[in-house]
Length: 170
Image (tube, rainbow, N blue to C red; front, side, top):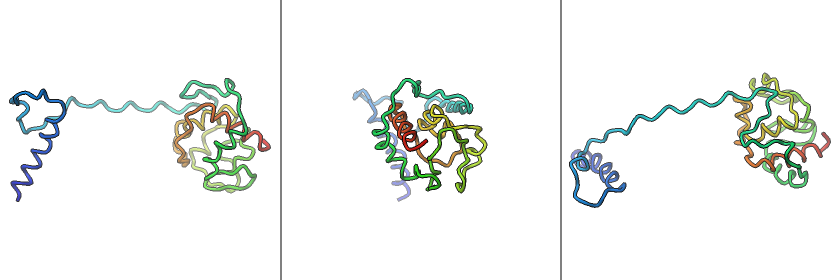
C-alpha cells in the first residue's frame, strides 16, 4: 500500500505535466524524469502604493467627479448595495455610520459609531471628490478601515451615488 501511495504521489504530477502540451512524440529523458524542479523563482509581489493623502482625490481609473453628471435617481438604485450597512437618516447608524450630512464632515466623526483608528486619524474631510475616490476602492484610501466593501469600479455609478447623497438633504 505504501508503494502504491508513493507511486501515485510521483506519477500524478508527471502525468499532469505530460498533459500540458507535450509534442505527442517519443518521450524524452527529461519527460520521464520523476523529479519536479520548480520553475524560475517568482518575483515578490510589488508593494502597494501608499494611500493617497487626505487632500489627493486621484482615482485609479483616472476619472474625476467633475467630468461626470450625477443622476440622483440612478444613484438611489445603486445605493441599494450600500443600504445593507449605511443609512441616509441622521443618527441612524447600522453596520456602517449614517451617511446623512457626509459631505463636509470629518472622517470618523459620527456620534455613536465605533470607527477604526485608521478612519479617526485619516485627516480626511469628506468632499464630494474625496468620496468619489473612496467609493472606488475604500481600502486604498483608508488602509485599515473595517469597511468590507471592495469598491465601485464604474465612475458614473460613483457620481450617481454622490448625487443621491447630496439630494437627501446634504
